[in-house]
Image (cartoon, rainbow over all chains, first blue to last red; front, side, top):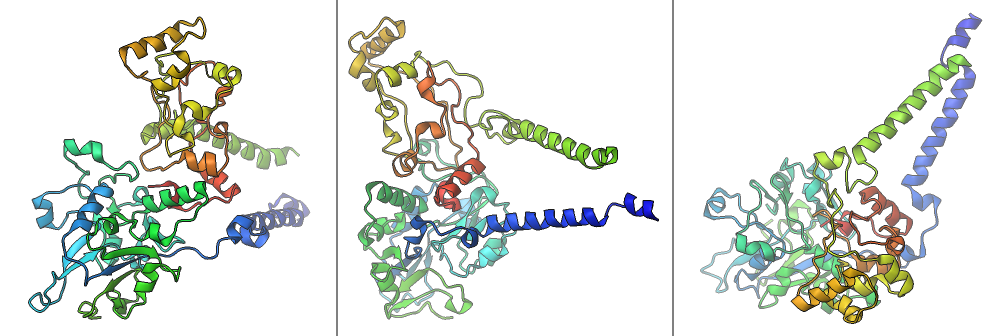
Length: 284
Length: 190
């Protein structure tokens, strides 16, 4: 009996040792996982008041439906060019689409068009369905898509109520003469991944970098027309900004009485607001 | 005691050895240059064989003796995302007159005579989905070049191989964490 106990794996001494080891490991991982609990907050992080929340306001009363935003977006973000066939099949790639609005065009004199970037929802349905974590909400309120992590299952495309995601059905193609004009700040996406609007994050990134180097934080005037779509809009109908900053133009406009969001009844909390005198689109 | 050795130490030792071998084989000592992973996934970010640079540029002589800064020739290291390679103009500032006896110095003047740039070969290339800004790291992060690059102050030649110590995501992220820099995916991925 005694020899049996000694030969068995779990004597009391060994058990105590293993327990101590396990507790130590768990504590070690906990210290790594929750550094805020174990380590004091560094001064650099404490200085930040609150993270930004990037948002966009599109004034439909100013929009003329010219399509400059859509073209500028395509050029800026290396969106592959597709032909008639793909467009008819519905497999073309567009980050900033100009969709015909649901209003009766005979009633409204203005071109009834609806520029639609990714809504960067606060409660994003696409993030919830991604099986590999290729899309997530970052601390600046952006819905981020990591091209290299995407496996191309297209659940997010099904989940997105705004159809703001496109799938690369074919390897991206550009005319030869165009290849030297691709934007080096934006990676090209391979076949088999889903892509979407990034709010031109590469521009935000270089703005932040410049601000850090020069020591001058960017003002709202520098941010207002930062994304390619907002920059190219002739009547300046698209305004970009930090919705957490009450002084920014975008935050002020988003609280206007004309402001509404698309499909608000779904509870997606979009970061893109629309302005219109007749809120024809808010049918939810 | 013998049982303890066989039960615990031997498997532990063997698995450590195995892990080490796997890591060596998969990642390689310098993952930007080799290793099975890099070969399978075409992760090569630099020429794997030593390139032959057009001139035998002596880094040590320029930095030690002439007290030059890296950014004097790699001009955009402090001014933009890409450090860039020197233009002929940077050489000509001093070498339009002979400074020494080296035959390659005369070659600089030959290039100038032909009106040609020196065809330096780029040895460090980032993967297409990575954004790296030299300005952010050198000016804002106050890092030294040799924190990531080989110490060119001791090199008597132009770089013939990738001279980055290890271009791995874990290395980038560990340093970002230690210095409280942002570790969001979008900080470095584009």
